[in-house]
Image (cartoon, rainbow, N blue to C red; front, side, top):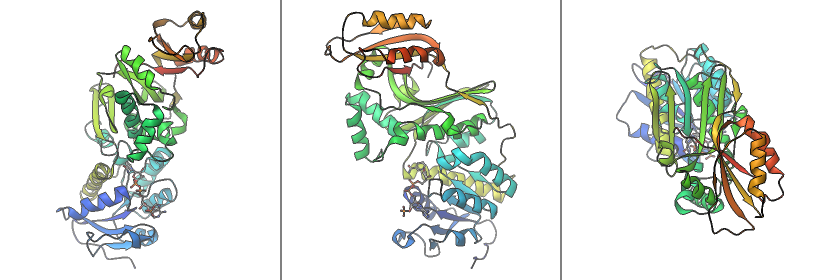
Length: 428
Ligand SMILES: NC(=O)c1ccc[n+]([C@@H]2O[C@H](COP(=O)([O-])OP(=O)(O)OC[C@H]3O[C@@H](n4cnc5c(N)ncnc54)[C@H](OP(=O)(O)O)[C@@H]3O)[C@@H](O)[C@H]2O)c1
């Protein structure tokens, strides 16, 4: 049976998904002295195992989503994650006239525009501030402090797992495999960390940032993702010679009808904001036509920081409902730009070779034949000649110009590992 509506000024809230974030959200709501938000339902499969003594007795525990959607709740918080059944739950909630708050990046990256349209049609709100960078309030900033600007670029460290691994290799010069094992032991990486390491997680977040900040509709799969698995401890030694370190950077630059976008390891100056981000923190830098660059730094994951972002969205929606404020509209200027990874940057090329005379001459020949210019050549002493790492840096050129040269280099018989090519980002 649907429960009765509450009188005056109280917004009913249902929580679907009582895991890491859901539990932290419930804790904040139960401990709050603000009585304008009332948690009425907690919904989870096998709900009996989830019950907590600190939750007030008048909260209904259930595993029946339909009973929640059929009740008088005003706002549904979706925190089960994934696409199925989260997508159906969010659609059903909006169709039932409930506003929705979610932290689900996969859902918003793939269906954000459709769901915002559905919310607008239903006169409801849909907020997803925790779906990118956890507790870092960059998405809410798009609708408040930055909405007066015209943003054209967003760059970020959006994956805490990758940043933990890269900053551990940087600080301890341990192999990639050891840094990954350490991240897994500390709970910063899953047993199968492919989504993090290979860039799938970060590009979903970049797609959401592009939609909310640049009003550009981007399918996550259309953004090139490069893995951090190919990074070696020696790359930090060579990067240091260039005044740089390595970070997984997600970039989106809107130029005319094209969105230049890429996710993957890059060289960044050691003393830059990106170079200074350690452990599993996130950093997002936005670039606006009028306001220039703005930076947002903080905890990109974790139950409590993410819950703060969820509850902040909840308060925003509750106030908007209370004030009878207009629903969140899909920006009318959302574009569907062409997606390109053809950035123009300087490049870092790292080779592992079986040493013999003529290697540098052969590489220089290929580079010259493709009209590329060498900026520097770095070779540290002391390595075994059977597995010798050295680096060539190139002056700025487009990715598309470099690519054919890399294809020629890939088949050289003195190479004992694939050539690692990384953009050098000088500005951040
Ligand atoms: N954790 C973070 O640091 C973080 C940061 C930013 C965003 N997020 C996002 O926040 C959301 C929640 O993440 P989380 O870390 O809290 O996940 P989680 O710990 O796995 O919690 C998910 C909860 O949903 C329940 N659930 C899953 N499928 C269900 C279904 N079909 N019906 C009912 N209940 C179901 C799970 O129950 P069982 O216990 O039975 O599996 C679990 O209690 C995700 O979208 C995630 O991407 C998380």
